[in-house]
Length: 126
Image (cartoon, one colour):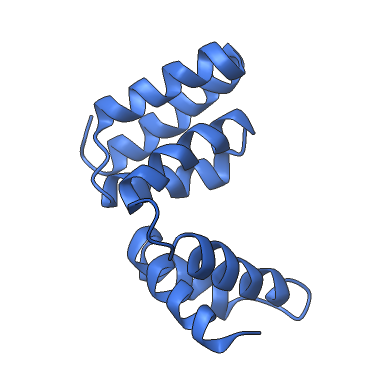
């Protein structure tokens, strides 16, 4: 594993998703899932999120759409929080989820709204 890329990814991952969540995920990794934690940290967060081509706010908006379309509520919960951290507004989250409804299906968007509403409430936006 490229240690420099891992450390870069770890920094970004902590800043977006929160140090407590990330540190717990890494600390509780087992021999079984540690390779996935390392891959995600180095490649997803270090290599892709660490690129200069898009800012974090834009990456968050894209992630919300893709993760909603894939109907991955656990990841969506994390990335709604990350999007708020990256400056995305609740109104923009609404717009993304409406776009998901049109292009990916109403059921995916309904689930996305459900998850986002919970996170927004937890973060004091509703």
